[in-house]
Length: 400
Ligand code: HEC
Ligand code: HEC
Image (cartoon, helix red, strand yellow):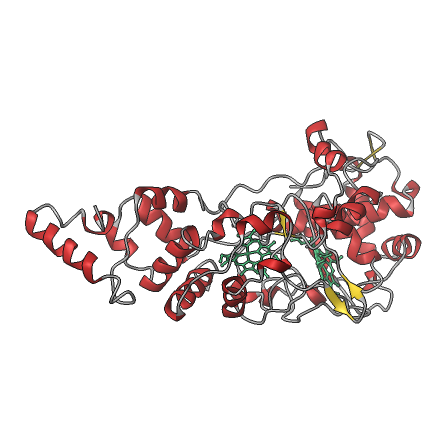
């Protein structure tokens, strides 16, 4: 039974069964040298963490999603500092391509120092709620927010409308493709009639069209997963034993997959993992608790006039979401892909390395937890080798 996945090509004789049995006995002693095998249940759990890449869904409520011209325009705007109040900050100031579209800082610095870590944007189109607190219900509304945020780019609707009207590349693209743009159920006829808020919506939707194209490639883990499912022993050997053991811990005793589930390694839900609430003396960041209020009050949410073609089902998530005390201190489960490039970690950037994150889970203070996190998370009994294995596994979820 044991090791059948690794040995079944060679182990057709009784002699081989003995070898396997011996390996199984020494395995606990020489853990770090031993071969790694998985039970059928474990293989099923591993299968559920893929396949990758996934088909990218369209951005809900965004009629420009998937339009090539909008993707190109969005990329240009993403790098355009004229959309900030000091003309010096663009999206790319914080979302840097060489750092997985993040910035290596604990918390973002735009016009002012913020309180949250800059999220990486690879695979962002797979999310259901946007921002650490899920304060936006679509990628396009999440794109409008930073331009208006006083810590980040700091414009108001009318100055942003003026900046866009002065932007020749933007206006000429809008002019050329006006019939793709829908307001009040109608394609745009005269771009000169577009008001500030409408221009801002077109800019946000174009940026979202661009970000939806930011997809990460298959990683060492994905190749191993395929090799395992195809029973390709040779290809399985390319994945390090340490990562194989880390994967076993991840889906097994540490139960990480309970929240970091599926090909994107996120259940898209909100949980409390025990990070501190305080962002400064007497200041707290309550996470999902304010995220729900933000999304409900957002004029650019899926219930508003600017969401085009979103179905009643799409709108349900926003109309039905309810605020409760349980949401205090909850954060969106992040994807675990691309972490090699996006340190430091957590919503507040308070953990410098992946080893720090693993240690924080190992030593979790259950008295600090409430909500769903409480029943799922508990301190873990993992030794030094096992902790490093978990880190090796996490690193195998990034394209090197
Ligand atoms: C000052 C740094 C900074 C700038 C400038 C900035 N961002 Fe961000 N971005 C952040 C931070 C911090 C977060 C997390 C925000 C939160 O949780 O509320 C974030 C989150 C996001 C998200 C949500 C990602 C997710 O996984 O849910 C998107 C999308 C995004 N930014 C797009 C943009 C776009 C588009 C621009 C330019 C218009 C931009 N950002 C400008 C720092 C920045
Ligand atoms: C109860 C759900 C839950 C479980 C179980 C869980 N996580 Fe998380 N994880 C989260 C949430 C929520 C966050 C974001 C917390 C924050 O920002 O404060 C997170 C953040 C992370 C991060 C940081 C990612 C980033 O982009 O900053 C890593 C790495 C991570 N988890 C790994 C793990 C590992 C390894 C395990 C198993 C030992 C695990 N998680 C178990 C919900 C969970």
